[in-house]
Image 1: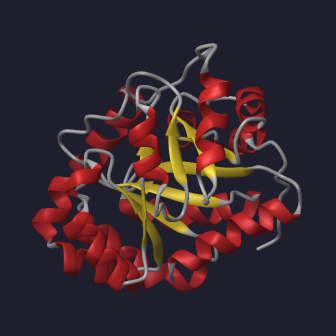
Image 2: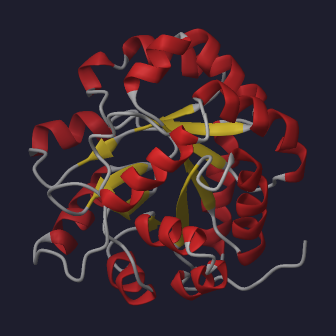
Length: 261
């Protein structure tokens, strides 16, 4: 699969005058064998894109819920290579675009070229590397480009105008607009300037802008979605899968309806 699958998914949502909904899950939380069923369920309920987190020992951007999920996955022996091999086996059953969220160290350990090639073979459409600064993405971005994968960039509330312009220039897939100052996790409210921040990024970006970090309810998704192209929900979905309450994930989606497999 290529980054164009991402573009098609976002276009389909836009054509229906709806907002995109990206769901984050931790690969291997509950065992790697659970990943396919989780992805099929997200596909069934109408999620736009599935973001798959790769467990890592030093997850600097992750809050406690995702950190604990990563620890459970690591305890199961889950690795980046293992996830890609698993996805490659099951990719024909998955129509939903898949984006990987991993840190820079595992990618370098793997080798950027090999990582890009194996990600492509696994049906991945894009990659998010939250601890990789724009200035250091050249080696990885070149490898991803060869394999037709999108490198998805993040923008934060503290990013100055000049940096936002650099990040949005040549952006691929979508822009991940971080809506809180801090790590991932459930929030009950947002700063007053978040709406203006999202609209500012959207005015500069040629690709969809999605709000992430802290989105944990349908109401929050709808509120933030008014100012951008959709939302990314992580900690709440990880929590619901872990607690065996996957049916409750449907309640988070603003527009999705259940599709038959």
